[in-house]
Image (cartoon, rainbow, N blue to C red; front, side):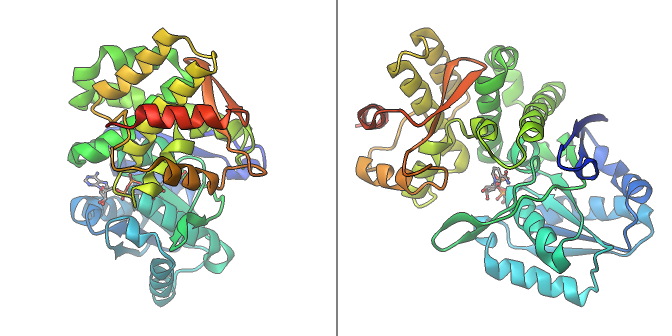
Length: 365
Ligand SMILES: NC(=O)c1ccc[n+]([C@@H]2O[C@H](COP(=O)([O-])OP(=O)(O)OC[C@H]3O[C@@H](n4cnc5c(N)ncnc54)[C@H](O)[C@@H]3O)[C@@H](O)[C@H]2O)c1
């Protein structure tokens, strides 16, 4: 199994390993027995993942020789709520989960975000391990320690920065993902290529057929490389200062589209359109050459991700959602743009006219 170390500057004890490989879940129990002095393990998972992998993880944890329990929440974004937090916390209290216990997040980004959030506040924080089971969670949400819960007013409005003790990205979990969830993860991988890795961008261009079939050695390369890119950024900027904001390439417009669609557009679809928008803005501002802009647009399209805004969207509504983005600084919208593949920059200087023109250009009539 391969390992990427996330070395955090704040304190060496917060640094942790991301393990990547096929079938590595079988070594989870021995890892926890050797490295964590837990009095019990509590797996938090969802109603789709539990029937698929709950038993395997529980069996692996038998090696720890401590009690293991499973708490299941309903699958889906609606579980990322304060009500679920209170429900899970009630169950943890009933199970006598203490500060010596270990929480295990087994699932996609929803389970990871809510379990990380609970771990950060339950009894003033207890340790947790991430076992991401979606591609998006393996390359993005399980790395970096951002946790979150949605409120009726918006997504991720409650949250903390709280790092896991380890991440186990078992690539065999990807075999059961729906095409839609697989593509959501690919959108984030494309993002990493654009902001940081031209070689991986070329690999995505050349190996499309094999990647779409989830060929194991290629998936390992993509997940490892993406985790390394995110880990490097998080190491340099744990709490989302300027550097970490490059990870939001495609997200300023993407988040607004997601919200404006009432979350009918998936995160990956919205980010894909947002990345096309960011590439076009970069080109409009004479920062990115036309041929590279076209390569970006083509790659997104070739992976079956959308590059246009559905016709029933309203430009004003999209602009209003962008203005509410919590990443706006002093009322100024910030975009991550690129000068070339691997050369991103953050700017608050995109003229409003350019933003509107690009949105309207992306709108299908
Ligand atoms: N913390 C961060 O830095 C960060 C970054 C990006 C996204 N997020 C959050 O992540 C969430 C989205 O995550 P997601 O896309 O993983 O969604 P998800 O967790 O809802 O998972 C998608 C669906 O796939 C199912 N599933 C999970 N693993 C499976 C598997 N191996 N086989 C079959 N089905 C499986 C889930 O049960 C669910 O129904 C959002 O809430 C978003 O805000 C967080």
